[in-house]
Image (tube, rainbow, N blue to C red; front, side, top):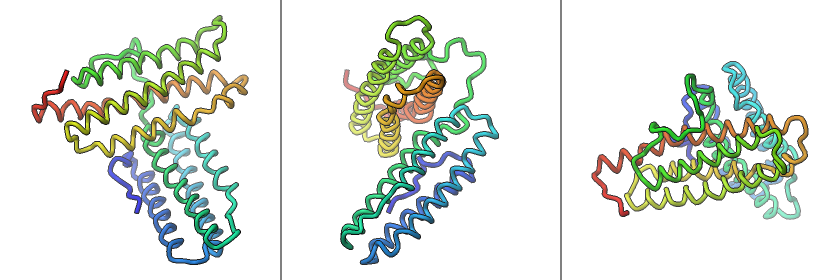
Length: 280
């Protein structure tokens, strides 16, 4: 049973309700496959129903994002397209009843993991990426991001620095080997993000932080987002490469900022309220 948990709520009623429905459909699909000995006989209708509802949901989501002029829309459209291609190209293994069941279960598991990841990384940012007004430096790690946990704050600052460096390279007109440097920085960002999340999760485990599972799900979704950046596709781009990179940097900065303000600062508050003394 895959639950539509509180941390999956983006607090836009129609979108949350459609996400809840998608989880329900996936759970019903898993149950149906479990109850039958002939997955091949139900696969087509099952997949068609899931695909149709997902495509309808994506259209509603994109229309809403257009209505609020959400700068994340191009990223969302690319991810929705990739999802549609995955489900459209699926071929059920019908070499045996057991193979058909395994094949369908693998697809359903992929769709469920994709949905979790997409909600927690991309959908969570809907309506939250509008640039702040009266901000001299959007990449500055200011006092509002301080959690009061020295290690966490130092690592957050370094993540901001990497994103800033990447942005600077994108806008550097005369830099030699610009593309290679961008790839190096994005790779560094991914590696350091994984290190930071591991450190943060270890800290939460030590202090018995009650929201650790929600944090882990959000961390996994963001790391998956970084892992799935297709450097080959980026290299092949011509006119749209810089636009794609600027959209990506805006998303990465926005996600990190919102995650710190909405989730990580709660860790510092929990430590303070429970008078927990951290080892140096």
